[in-house]
Image 1 (cartoon, helix red, strand yellow):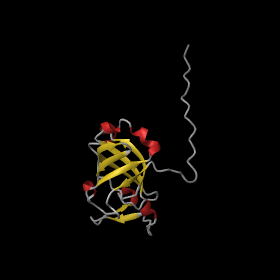
Image 2 (cartoon, helix red, strand yellow; image 1 turned 30 degrees about the horizontal axis):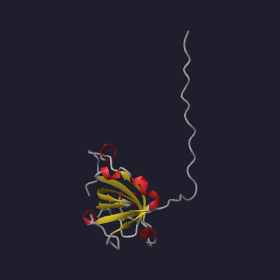
Image 3 (cartoon, one colour; image 1 turned 60 degrees about the vertical axis):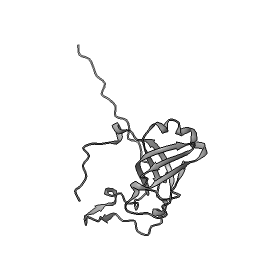
Image 4 (cartoon, one colour; image 1 turned 180 degrees about the horizontal axis):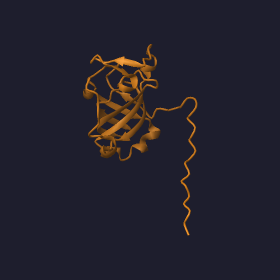
Length: 157
């Protein structure tokens, strides 16, 4: 006698999200940077002012040395051009998704930054490439086992 095995049923594909996605800020960036710049962000010190209703969600974050900040680059949304490609200083042309440009379709920024301190609902960070007033959408702890890829490959130019 032989046993019958049930074939694993594949789940039905989930339909893609249709229409806009609404995201609300959980806080805002405060620093002395008033316009975007191509470099020098590693020296920038910022304070992320988390909205009062999210303060309890910060519990335990002070134990981490680094965090990941997701933010909305609202000034880029008003930029006149929405390029598909950019020519970098190296002279090489890349698709916008192969750059760190703020001129992205959804103008989302993601940065891993040093967490210098937590005081109430304020986070002091270094290296955040966001200008003063930028809306913060999410904060996550930086976890080397997930967020660091030692043998990651990047183009030479």
